[in-house]
Image (cartoon, rainbow, N blue to C red; front, side):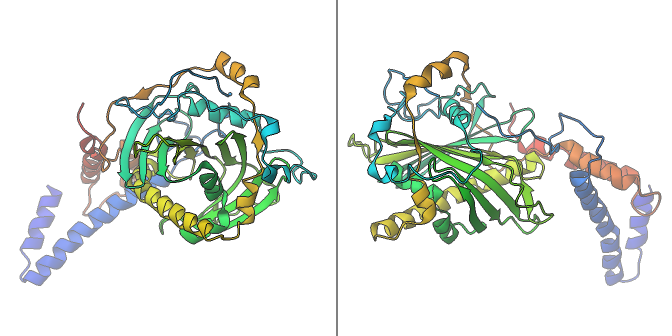
Length: 426
């Protein structure tokens, strides 16, 4: 009744201008209070809170570690109706022996390591192999996206571990590309600064000339409403014939102190498996290159909001990478001088599967890939507790005035159903 009486008083004002001003004064505080409540509910969390089921819990363990391959007799495992993200070759690619190392690699196999302890070890290789072979025993993967261009096809999956950020897997096949080119492209930070406008700073902190292990410092630009993010990660490549296991994960670095801005991202994992596959042109030639990417990170924002942002920006980022690769191909074809970062991609560890496949098969368990379609790309599932909690904070501070607490709670309740309405019915 209070609202009705106040609104009627506004309508009884003598001029249209006075009525308009009164209505604006009537509505603006409602929206300000609501938006303020949502914002407070989004970012406010007392230290004693430990609600594991709440999606806005920003704490997360360090990146997982893990085990490497066994051979399988079946051939081409191209994506079928089940939307499996197995690589196009079901069998593990043949691992080259140490004697098969090329001359361009051998020239680096000398000299003392500058790293006291390697931040990327064989356990990280084993973990990546388990992810590639779907034997890491994690939650099921849910299909997200299936897109293509004339020279590239892309598929993506996502899953939600209970105590860590959302994880993503993607399979990209580039036509007329080699594994060696993709390997160098992903490692070449100097060239990345030319095509990736999100990277504003990239520097190699340390490296091992024997294994090719590097410690890299990045600063990545985020949208205007978020501060930039700082990454310090180690990376290393294992070579299996013409297939490559490329591991990248966040590592501690005491020599670079943590600052308020840019915000440090400690939990970061982004690794690739790269191999040659048959072209979709149907000529039976291995002229295409497949890249399986596994990625997760804790950017310091609510995971549900991060999932929505990733979903909206994923295809744009993939297209940007494709354009960067095309530019890189042209530059390399014109005899561009290879950068030091790309040069370090040639320094990698040769692996023999015979010593690892048995160990990898003994304790590994399969990971399910769900065939049900993902939610529409425009959907968002914001936890109701974020909105209702924000409204509660504001309501508790308002004792009187034109915005009674009952209205604020009603608005929060209605907007708390955003995620439910946006999601498809079962």
